[in-house]
Figure 1 (cartoon, rainbow, N blue to C red):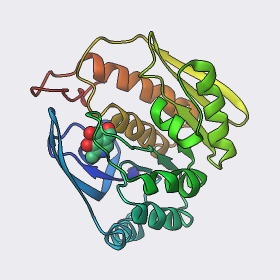
Figure 2: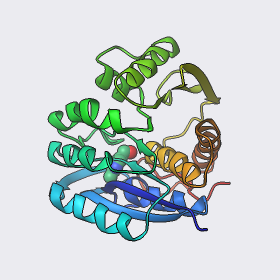
Figure 3: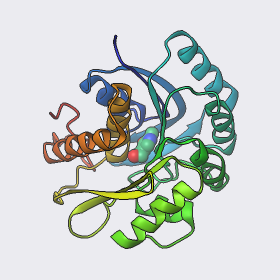
Amino acid sequence: VTPVALTIAGSDPSGGAGIQADLKTFHQFGVYGEAVITLLTVQNTTGIARVECVPATLVVEQVRAAIEDIPPQAAKTGALGSAEIVEALAELAAEFGFPLVVDPVMIGSHGSSLSSPDARRLVATRLVPRAFLVMPNLDEAAALTCMEVKDVSAMREAAARLCAMGARAALVKGGHLEGPATDVLYADGAWREFTAPRIETRHTHGTGCTYSAAVTASLARGSRLEDAVARAKTYITAAIRTAPGLGRGRGPLNHHAL
Ligand code: PXL
C-alpha cells in the first residue's frame, strides 16, 4: 500500500520552506502527501513581508476532510501562527491514531515571527504533550523549556524536559551550534546523538521544515524512530550540501537529494 503523510503548516510561495518543502520531501521519500495550510506568507529568499493566518475552524475542517477520507500513517505540524490554531489542533490531535511530529516553528529563517507569544505558550503546554516527536532548534528548545540551550549538555537536559512535559520523544537540533551539527534525541529514557559536519553555506532556508518532513515520511513508511531520524539527518545533510543556489538571499535546499 502507498504510505501517506499529512503536513499541517504554512505556505512559502518561493517553495523552499513550509508546506511546499514538506510535500517535495514526502514525494522524494516515496510517500503520498496531504497538506493543510495554516497560514500564508508573502516571502522569497530575501525575507518575509507578510503573514496571514487561516481561521482555526477552517484549519480543523481541512484536517478532518483530509484524514477521514485518506488516513495518513504519520503527520507533522510546522508554522501554526495563532493561539486559536494551536489550541484547536491540540484538541484534534487527541483523536489521531497515527504519530504526530511537532516542528515548533516560532521564527522563520529571516527572523520574522511565524507564531504569536500566546501560540508559543500553547505549543509548550497543549501540543508538546500530543507529540510522538518534538524537534526544536536551540532557540525553540530554550523557549519551550525556559532554560538556556547553547551546548550539547544543555540539549540533553532540554530533550529530557520536553519528554517530562509530555512528548514521547524529543530531538533537539544543533544546526546553530558552533562546530559539527549535532542533534540530540531523547526517547525511552535514553539519549542518542546524530552528528554531521558543518557545511559553510548561506542556503539553509527551509532546513527545519525539510528535516521534520523527512522524519515524518520515514515514520509513515513504518521506520522505527531512530532509523527515521538517522535517514532524515543523512537526507538533510545531502540536501544542504547540494543546494541549487537559487534566489538572491538565503536559498532553498536540494529536495531531490538522495
Ligand atoms: O523554516 C520555518 C518556516 C516554516 N514555515 C514557513 C516558513 C518558514 C521559514 O521561513 O516560511 C511557512
